[in-house]
Image (tube, rainbow, N blue to C red; front, side, top):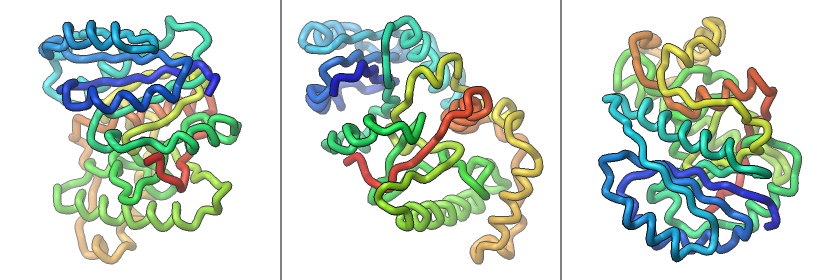
Length: 269
């Protein structure tokens, strides 16, 4: 792949995932950006990793003191974007969660296929078990899954959404992509020029400014028609502090740059 590509990775417990970075050999024009908390003792490991790598490695340690996880993650992802903005000629950036989901061998041919197509600006992928419901938003689902009035109801919303997205992706033709407002599922590819100036934010009070009350009401009406929620007192929790940082990033990109957020029916694994 002759594209100029950057990987944006925020992480902890770096040692657990070091052995999986051999998959990066498939990307000849690659820059990898790591951002990590200043309480992680990783400096020496990054120094050695940089010396041993055949691709460009940039690593940055930041102070991240918020008690809220989504705010800490947003800070780290935005630092990645700040570094990315200083690089020249990056065609695509991959945002990658450093977790067990991405420890599997990637299907590089899937990446090659879609990088040739101009049918998306952000592309994420299906899995045999679609897990990242918090980052997911599409028609009828305009509110994040952990933002309802009880944990039990949130779990039922997650179950409904998992079944719904599984059905929708399975019904796609092989050449189709699923249009959505937000999706991540552990890894997503971005057409970098379309996301210039867009930032992450993990606070619900900021996310709700770009989603209308009408959309939230539509979500409640959709969910109340599902059998497991039909008899429940389903309400939105307006006091929730956190929301998934990907939601704000993707919705802002749609609003500001008319970005096409899509999901492939195929797995990257």
